[in-house]
Length: 122
Image (tube, rainbow, N blue to C red; front, side, top):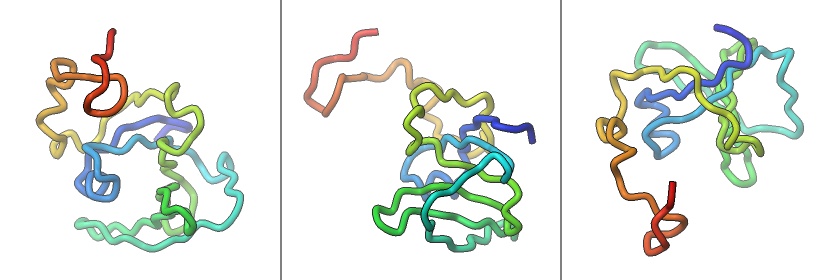
């Protein structure tokens, strides 16, 4: 896997953990990751038997990253990054479990803020 790669993961675990149809992640090797403070961690065992550390903020619950047990590669959850609007996934993985409605997302109604706000102008 190449360094600093952005992906959108559509696996069922990411859908369940995020409560969303996919989760955007930035992939980085350990030498390119600096963690300040202490993250709460637990080990999740996937259906495949693969074990991954899942980390989150113990104060607010924000999901921070997933990593292998040796902490060599990190999947950083892009949603909490200040620059998340500028980070665009280059690859979508686990496409076989993607939400079918994403194929027509550009045809759906978009509004500027809450449900009763003005239509979003493109």
